[in-house]
Length: 442
Image 1 (cartoon, one colour):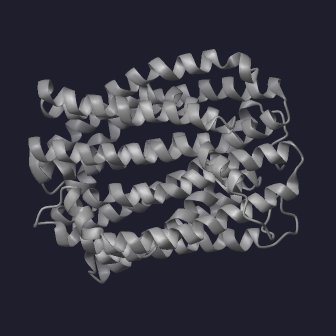
Image 2: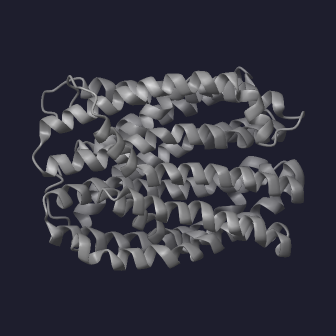
Image 3: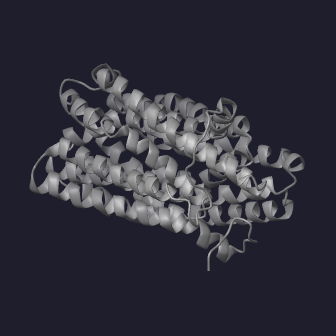
């Protein structure tokens, strides 16, 4: 039975609705993880370090897709709740065209300046060439990457989360197969990993474009539009928190790399890469849940159904908190086998990685409420508050911790930074949820 945004959501219905988006985000996170697995084992730890050094920049520009996708989804969901379907179609078409044009321009400029970007990020002569090779190849596919990120959210507000899941799984499986073919069999190294990812991103973009090009039995679809810059600005404002999260995460990754080079050299960057892959997987599940439930919130906010708004929020708090406890315990258990899969050939590096991962993974006891608070206010079209919560959590608190803690705790201070930052971030997220209850009637 098809689940609609206008439904009443029990625990079962809510989980069934968000589950496809959780798996979808999980498969999206596998792009870099699979690349890293093949590169580390078949091209060596220097090439692996090069990927992890250039990824922060690639992540920032790819995050523009999340900016438009999440912000546009909140606006479109509100329009659908207000029964303004034709306006929703126009907004969808405008946002996709904006991403297409913007992606081409950003990619071209980035390719020109990729070398100084890599140097700024900390690349030394040992890995600079690999950083440039991987970066240029990935940037050639960047427009598709941005659009795929946006479609993950838009397909949910179109009441097609399962279709979005199928598209993402197909793209993810393509990436895995091509990684094995290009990196392992053909021995193309970093370039092969980048081509595998890029081709899979083209697939993940082309299929949603075809879906929205048809109007039959579609909740929303493409149509002719006129540029509406105030609406475009509002969509960007709505998605600002998700974009700020992406920017902050990648800026903090750069600072982490600087500190790791200081305390552990290139091995520290390789260890952090493995730790990041585990946290990406776990973050993907929380992000997927938030991507899945926010269109529901936007719809019922637009329909002024305050009881259902409260229902979805309270159930989400309980579900995400429980997920945090389970994933923290699971992370402690998989630390050793996961580390061995990537750098089992280097015992000292493996020991460093396992120790760091088991400390860092504790952050998932505290981050669920912070992530939920930010996404909830995005869904309510309160972009500034959502961005404030997100920036405080992913940038201000983390920057403070990564700069200060290593001065006292050395390498352990780096591994603890995420955990302490999430605890500090709760000091804003929880009061914001409490204070805004009267305004939004939840």
